[in-house]
Image 1 (cartoon, helix red, strand yellow):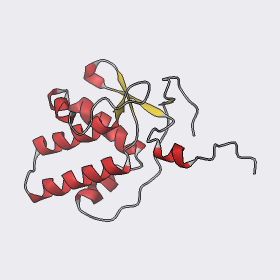
Image 2 (image 1 turned 90 degrees about the vertical axis):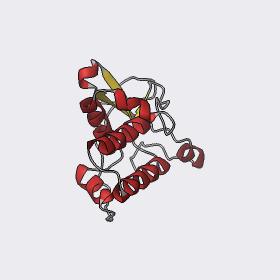
Image 3 (image 1 turned 45 degrees about the horizontal axis):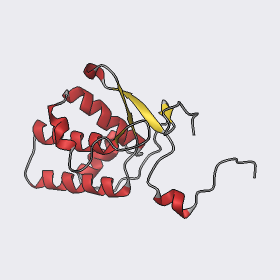
Image 4 (image 1 turned 30 degrees about the vertical axis):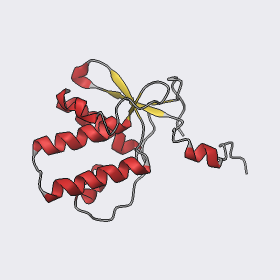
Length: 148
């Protein structure tokens, strides 16, 4: 087998840190951010929030909150440390909505979820994740990495 990819250990799998991050243009914010895909727990939290939204809240404000939650979970610094999380994502509600939408879309793509699959989640349907893109990826040190 001529494959030079690393065989991951249990510790590697449970470390919770991806090896690459994607650079995303934050539009009106005047810069870029790094994003990573969602963990299983984060994805579960988002699905739970979608279910809550289906029970009552609707409209642009609710969707902006969902986008902020997704963006908050996925944005990281150059070392891979989460910038916002479950307790701080609401701070993003005051940030340019188009920037947050672009960031949350990139997080979903890095998580292997398409817009169509997110719609399926919103509809409580089963969806099979598609493969995400890793173009524009960075290593945890912030240096660009090759495609995986």
